[in-house]
Length: 216
Image 1: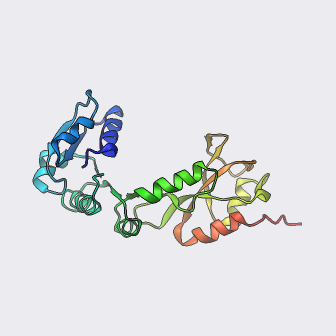
Image 2: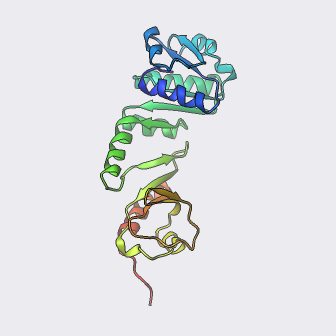
Image 3: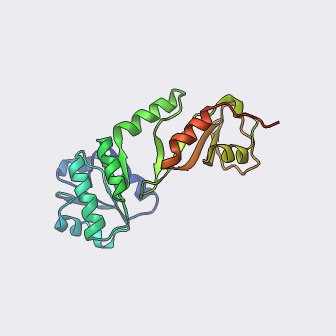
């Protein structure tokens, strides 16, 4: 739902991955944003209207993305897709970060646009992100970039995990992703992305930022 810049780009990206795509928008002129080789279905109407969703083929759909410019429309459409049509894979674009947290707890994955974009600019400017990169639908587990004190350089992933309580999901080393094992040694300028329970996230961040103390 939504054929703006994000929706049209998402539709083409999913088509390139071999999916059949239907895209809904109230404004017929919005569909000009789609590439000329778009082979999917375009449907005019409100994406939270059951009849419109049915015309778009939601009863045969594997996933639904609500990416219009309105928070309320997106979350209503996402809930209709999940609760009325039983779509398991549903995601909603939300501008209001506080609302996004609420809907995450309801089991609807969201993309809070402004915080998401801001934190990626922060990361690109060389600072560790203070938000999470991903949360599971229950909102209890996250993957977050951890700011790591330089004293951890030369320490194994296993020791880092033991001391911080965070499980390293992957490292970004010189621009390339690495899936480490417990014997992998942290190196200078590694970006550390760890899976951690939300309740333990603050402690994990604090432990990673603190100097590593080597036992005698």
